[in-house]
Amino acid sequence: MNNIRQIVADNSETGTLKRRTVSGSPDDIVHETLRTMKQLANRDSSHAMMQKIADQLKDCCSCCEIENIYKIVVDNIQYVSDPKGEEYVRAPIHCLKERAGDCDDMSTLFACLCKAMNIPVMFKAIAWRRYEYTHVYCLAYMEKYKTWVVCDPVMKKFGKEKSGIKRSVTIEV
Figure (tube, helix red, strand yellow):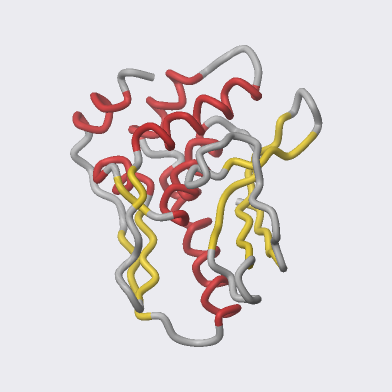
C-alpha cells in the first residue's frame, strides 16, 4: 500500500469533474448525486491506475481487501467541503491525485476500488439532521460473513455507522 503515491504520480491521465449549482428538491439532488457517483466509480474502476492499486491489494479474503481499500482512502484523502451552493463530485482519479474530497468523493473512490476488485458495494445517503440528506458513505459486501459492512471514510472508524439516522437511501454501484 506504500506504493499508492507512486502509482498516482506516474499516471498522467485525467478523469471527469462533475460540478453543478444545487437546485431542485433535496431528494432530487441526492438522487442525481448518487447517479453521478455510480457513473464515475464504474467508469474509473477499469482505469489502469485503479487496476494497479487493486492488484497491490489482492489478499486472502475479501474482508482484508475491504479494510485495505478503506485504509487507503482514510490515509490518503483529506476531507474538504464542496463550495457553498455547489454539488461537486470528483472522479476517483482526481480524488487520488488531489488527495482531497468530501464524503461523496471519498465514497466514490472507495466504491471504484471495490469495483476494480469485484467486491459488491453500495452507496448509502443518510439524513440525521432534520430530514434532509447530508452525508453519504459505502456499504461493502463481506462474502466470508455474508453481510454488508459500513465503510465511512469521514468517520474514520471501519464498520461503524453514525447513530440517529432519520432516513436513508441506497444505490448499488
